[in-house]
Image (cartoon, one colour):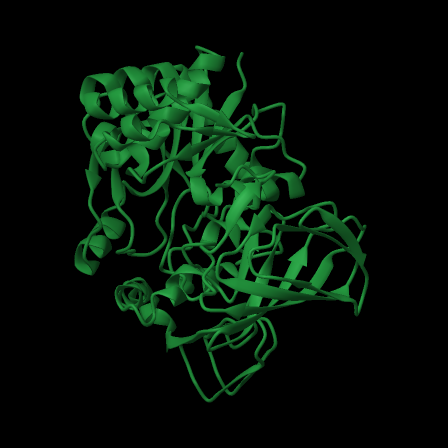
Length: 473
């Protein structure tokens, strides 16, 4: 029997956990609950070679190095990293991954997972996975339905129909996100489950249903995979073909229209961490119901969440608040109204003066390390660069700025117009405007240096890359 092929969807740019989650590093790649990212926790759940094959990850091209690096950190080999050239929702993404899986094994069963859900790896969870795989091998398209414990208005629901084998049931109906009154009525009535967005699919059957029910999606995915190109360790789906797909979810395109849909009701712990109140529920809390991450003190307060990266936060005399403090932004609001954050983030993005706060953090990460902005003024900028051991930046030049580098930790190998210089702590070098230069870390510890830029234009797009080991233009 073939191993289950995990398909991990990791391309989302979630806004509902702003200011921690931003488009350059969204929630699946940050540590929200526990010491590893949600994406890494997803990888850990599928690493059992007795149950799973190598995972296929489909993500935005912007996140390709985050995916590769975070998988490497956990020592998990990936079967493929598919890069979506444009966002087209889940139907096209899953179809493309299914085509890749079938090309490797025509009898493949794929387990479709979101990379940003919180699911403890319990025996109950793996029992459900095994039952779903059995139901899929019986010829069903299986969705996991979470047994509700409250009248939730933020999820879609599935009506549970006639019982089948292995704990699966026919789908009675799909129910859109209800209002509170309807959610309470469904909870009281019973026989409904939350739609988790997780699936177990016989890949060949899924593709046949996709071709029958959503032919434009199928044709786009097939063309995108057929025209795909390898780029380092990544597979770039063909842009023109993939962009031709309708922007539609797999629920609307397939599951609500097929007679092959089944639901497996499950009761293992699950959260889509869709808002800060869900993060609060997923964390350990004190006797007063408070959850704290980072340097903070809570006094005379109850049922609150504090997440802070650097600033020491003190909350006194409050109830039901969320305080989220990053290097450059602070959100304060009612924890019970945390669903409002998504709309707030969209408003910030629509305003040119605040758009950057939704896109990047003060610290930006690159495949070689990253940098933090320290100070910016008229015609100058100060940054801290950090370079991982053995990594190097692209060979590059700038048209509008010169730079000074001062090493504060580690050893730097600096190439300027072909001449190589080794620098250690408290040594510096000047990079004149227009020179061809490269920075590398030949040492065993992380390299840190202070960069002072001066010039008429200091934007990140003033980089002409001549050579780059990461395949960037």
